[in-house]
Length: 453
Image 1 (cartoon, helix red, strand yellow):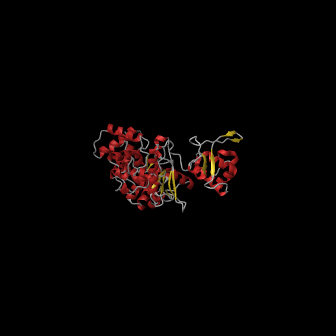
Image 2 (cartoon, one colour):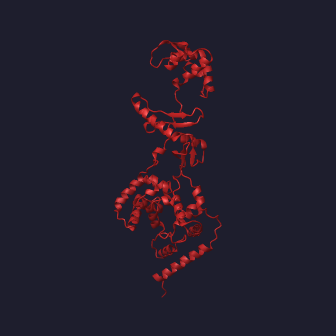
């Protein structure tokens, strides 16, 4: 009677022959695609999802996210990655990383053996093979899982990578390019937005969680916790898995989206304005004429001033400091930030009621046209002016009148009635032309505004 099953020993030999056959296919495979990029080229092409605004001395003063598809931080050197994370990653993904030459044939044989006996085993993909998939979309794993062709392509690419890259370079690039969860790509973004710290500070528990996310970025918190718990146990670190599960749920539910250094977030409004002017794609860094020290002083002074005026219905403010000689902007504070009810609105450029701001220009024009001098007397008493819309009766801010006052007193006291009487002499049309010539850009003619201009 013919046997329809194999002994374990025969199956092992069959698995070994299968692994050897795969090795032969890899060696004989012809890859018509262009060679994978080198380490230096990959690192140079890396771009953070943020643009950093620098001051005139090169000091970082603001970080703005400019890539809304993925979150990526700065490229992180392997020496700046926590040893705990490196250990957890290799324990999870590639235990013989520093021993093989790109393909772990022992793992391939084990995987083949498991497939023959329908046993679940760890995948045979090494870190180098996974990096090949990150560098070449054609080598990436499809949604339905890796095919034999994809595996062979990754294996061949991995052998090529190992010939031109060092092991540390491979591991460093992998940590920077791999996706962890959702929009988080790379160790810098993952470490900041999940744990609120730099990659060098990740402890064993955080590292186990991160390594678990690499294996299954979209897994449920319970599944991530189960795998992380297994990694910690393998390392001999006793930790109740239910406690870890609660921690994982908390980490994945609430992300720390704030920059690590708030003192470097000094000029959000100007940063967005300059980035919009540069256009897409946004550069990694953008230099400005601001002075970081003066910018910080302007921001703090505004906040202090607003705090003192809180009882007087003053809700927000803005500051711009310009060097009169060069015209360069040295400080630009668009709002008070947390004290403001509209912190995103740039108070430096937003349109508002001009109020008394225009009075100096009006009196300057009246003096230039020799209607008045600074000592001329102007009547500050009630007046009614006939307009197309009816009778216009201007009022002073305090609803009081001072009689005859000099032009300089009217300007210094910001009186409305003398200003309107001066506008009658200059005429709204000529005053509007004057404002436009100064770059104030009125949307309508002087006749549209009339004596309320």
